[in-house]
Image (cartoon, rainbow, N blue to C red; front, side, top):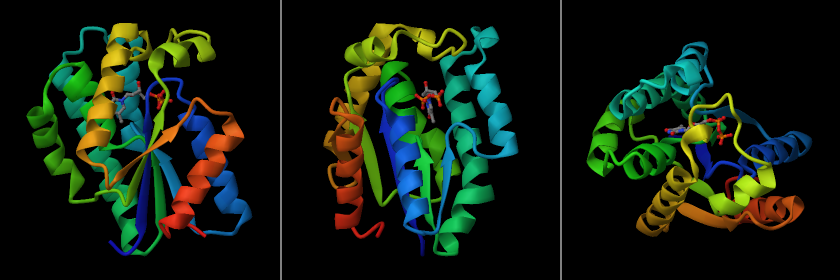
Length: 208
Ligand code: TYD
């Protein structure tokens, strides 16, 4: 990989979308070359898969199907957009990546690490992030700050116990991969969190 890959992770309501938008603004105003995308989604096909996964009409979906659809969406995004961009030396930022599958499907759904790892083996092609920013904010406080779940989103409706398990999953991942996963305290003010992210990415030589 000639380019650099930065991924963002965290529980529902941790402020991830806001921080990704602020990083995008920073990179644009400082004239840096990058692409930014999200999971599930980011390509026409992956966005269609996203609609199937998250649609609340699909409440009959079994956990294995959900995990495989995330992997399918990821595979399409990687091969269509991310890997070509990395090969041409670009900076790529993804809002959620395979750590989401470990936190949500392996830990919270209980499918286990091996299942998710095997499902993703086909998708990943060794595209390991240079850094993963884990926005650490516990889900109970996050839901209060957010004003409750989005009632059109199947995963947001999964209940607080589920989201606490997601949080436990992220903590376990952060312990398992301390070199790659950087924990940022996301309970702080928006600008403070943003500044911490910029400082960290500069220190790592990933942005200017
Ligand atoms: P989204 O509305 O993008 O949530 P957020 O703004 O919190 O990122 O919906 C993505 C949902 O999909 C979110 O609930 C997390 C979940 N998800 C998984 O369960 N596994 C995955 O591998 C990915 C990428 C996302």
